[in-house]
Amino acid sequence: MKKTMTTLLLALAGALISPGQAGAQPFPSKPIRMIVPVPPGGSGDLVSRLVAGAAANDLQQPIVIDNRPGATGNIGTVAAVNAPADGYTIFLCSIGNCSVNASLYANPGFDLFKDIAPVILLGSSINAFVTGPNTGIDSLQTLIGKAKTGDISYGSSGVGASNHLAGELLKKMAGISLLHVPYKGSGPAITDLIGGQIDVFFDNEPSILPFIKSGKVKVLAVTGRTRSANLPNVQTMEELGYKGFVIEPWFAIGAPAGTPEPVIQRLNAAFNHALKDPAVISKLNQSGIGAIGGAPSVLAGHIKSEHDKWAELIRAQRISTE
View (spheres, rainbow, N blue to C red):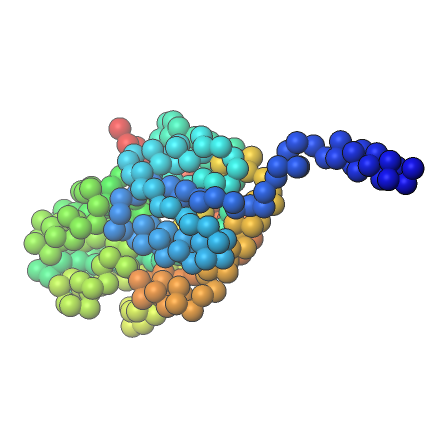
């Protein structure tokens, strides 16, 4: 009788467990794909590979980098947000695809505030404002004076890039005219800056720093809230009188909206752990990138504030991809 009762109880317990619960496996149980919507070799790709490698150790599953460049990050982002919301597809968020593009494009292909689940804010860099070797521009004040009496050109790595927006912000705040010359990436712009085809360039510190240190370009200012540890003697734009002129290109991790909260939290914990790794911190710092981390809500707030800031400038300056 006891044996029969035990068998009945076990059968009843089994019936109360849903098929999904019975077959559920702890996350993650297979490799994770990380879509990086920029080409290999740039700052975003570097950050992605570095932190993904460390987070994979914590998750005990590989994180496979999938570069999907195009349309200033929109192509890769669309692919990511349309993937199953199960945590096995994540993607790199940055100032472009996760703030600027929502205002720059009439239809970027996704809704910034409905289609993305914030995971973690990884870190940020700054831009350095540099000039070529033969421009005769030795300070921001000299540049402003020249811009009021003649044509000054500035390069960018593309329409809507942080270095494009930096030039537009300077035009607005200083009341000057500058000729925008967009390039397909920082490399060609730096080449033309050194060669004298353009006069000035706001570039991400990681890519321009070697040229500053070698003396091939002259740095006029940096765009961070504080001075750069790599350029401690260079004043910020705010120190030079342009209050609110803060541009700090940033990197983060997003997931498709609807990704379960426990999965988001597990990913967040793994990447936070990676950002505390001394080797990761050291390599990021060497590249001019400061680690941040924190809860998903930190990234959500950052996306909102960055979107609002750049939407206002894009409207005021009538910036368009057309």
